[in-house]
Image (cartoon, rainbow, N blue to C red; front, side, top):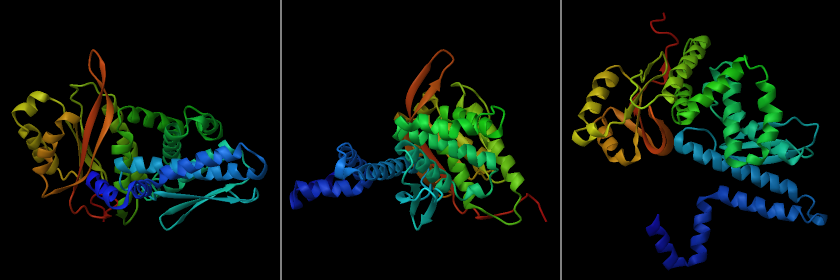
Amino acid sequence: MSELVKYLLLSLGPAAVILFILLLVPEKIEKWSALLWKGFAGLGGIFRCAHKRYLKHDLQGRVNEFVKTLRRQVPSVGPTKLRVEWVDPSVPRKSIIDNDTVVLRLRRDDPTEHNFVHGAYLFVSGTLLRRPKRYLSPPQKEAVDLFVCTKLLEQEKPAVVEAFLEQYLHPKTEDAKSRVSIYVDDFAIIDSGSLFFPVFVQELEYLGDKVFGKRKDQLVITEVNGLIDFLKPIANRTIGDQGDLTFDGEYCRFGIVIVGKPSKLLTSVEPYVNYIRNDLVRANTETIYIIARAENAGRVEEICGRFSDDYACERKVNFKKLLRYSDRKELALQHLVVLRKRGVSIIQPSESGSQ
């Protein structure tokens, strides 16, 4: 990229370079445009309609940027574009899909912060995990929408979080014993270990990619519950714990490999290679998540290279994670590589051995 920028700078001048860079980050243009319209809205008079344009560009820019960030962790997450359309108060709020764009229809007369909250929730509920949601229970779907929308607003628009709590989260989790409330709490635990988006959401996406013949929804719902129960103790694990890191379900089959002992890496990567070959590959594990400190990324690449014939590298991402030791906690930069077995069948039987 730096060489391309230098070439454009010499050939076309600074203005062309700035324009080129802006075209690469349209969500930034949306957010800057929102600030401009916000300024106009404060002038009143002929700029009375400016606050609607401010909300439109603010929502489009922030949601698009959140999705762009999310796609670094889960590349298969759906449409990356958002467009807002205003409708009369008598028309229901809704979201529709137009090619690769999500169109949100919001009411003109709603308060600005409420419109932002409604728009964000409609976007998440209408687009995130659209394929796997066909198989999830209503409480599972609702809890995923609530949790992800909360993360979106916390990251992009903290000022409207209170409105979201009042409009959506508190009413839907008022009963602490409801399935929705329990799921939201479970997701918070999984997310505290930085496993919600890169592992849980990714596995749901893989689930949605599969086509089931004689579908057994309850079996899938039970498996998702098992996936949640499996990830919770891993999210809370203390360095050195020896808990199970392999999930062998009917439809989700994956293993987490934590490369955490420098003494092993200094001598050889063979212990990790042997474990993957003997325990995961032989068990027909579909996805392998390899996690290590960022400074050991090179050694992780060496491990992955040993399985390139059977597993494709889906993505690599760095993220910060709180490591729990017996006597302390430490925030460290982690390196994640996701390996996906080549040739995973799209059509899946609904039950093992079913006739």
